[in-house]
Structure formats: structure tokens, C-alpha cells
Image 1 (cartoon, rainbow, N blue to C red):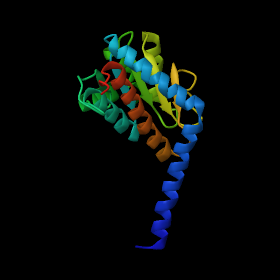
Image 2: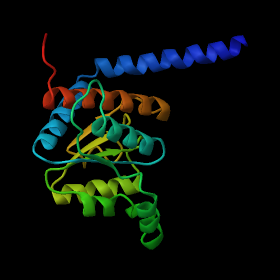
Image 3: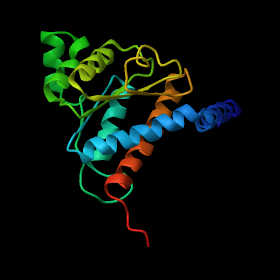
Length: 199
């Protein structure tokens, strides 16, 4: 094992730690995260569902979050209604082929979304065209839109109900903070809807 490889590992871990520390110090980030958890819990309690969309690594994050909600995060409890719009290959390829890739999430939101639902839209740049189209459609339909993006917010910041901007411009660090944030949100939702008995 080379010293250079060890240095690379340490450098990345230190940078990762510093980004998490920056998020901890960012009151706007913390408050947005808390409100997002409460909004999602309220929507689910009222019979709504969560739709999730993202491209690439953000698609994997969408599926991960849906899995935590439908399955469980910290303890056993009833399943919650969440659908990752990134998983149905027949739907994705049909829309991309018959219409355009720009519409792969927008059409699913239009078909599956209802007033009172939540769309979690994930884009590290905040500029993904198909995510922006899904956001605009969701807002028109009366869904609450929660965006997860990077430091600048891109075009998402101005068109989401809540936009969680990870304090970084580096994609890998933005994605790390997104999944940390998702675990916080899912934890809030579990505790609000299925509070554990205090011993």
C-alpha cells in the first residue's frame, strides 16, 4: 500500500467531514431539513404519497429513499407510500422513445401524482431538464415539491416549495449530504407517524 493512496483516502475523508461540518453550521440547511421532514410526515398522515425522481446517482438516491419509507429505517412500523419514478424500465423507455427523455418524470408525475402528495426532486446541479419539468408539473397539480440540490440551487431553488442546498459544488459530496439528509427526513417521518414508546 502506497503512502500516496493513504494520503488520497485521508484527504477525501477530511473534505467529507468538512462538508458535513458546513451543513451543521448552516441554519438554513438545518431548518429546511426539519421542515421537509414535517411536511412529508403530514402528507403521509393525510393519505398522500411521496414520489421521487433523479438521474444517475440521484436516481439511486430516489430508490434508496423510497426503500426506507416503504420498508423501514430505524425500527419496525407499517409501510409508507413512496414511489421512485426511476425504476420502471418499461415506463421510462416508452416515454423516452415515444415522447422524449425530458418527459420521463413529468408524465409519471401527471399520471401518479395527486394534490397533497409530495415530490422529492433530486439534482446535484439543480439544472436537470427532466427534473425541472417534473417540478413545474407537480406545482401545477398541487403537490408539495422538495428539492435536493447543490450549493447554488441552480434553477431548482426558485421553483420548489422547499429546496435543500447541500453546501458544496462537488457532486460526490453533494450526494453524500443528500443521503444523510434523506436518513434524517425518514427518521423524522417515522418518529412523527409511529412514535416509539418511551421506556
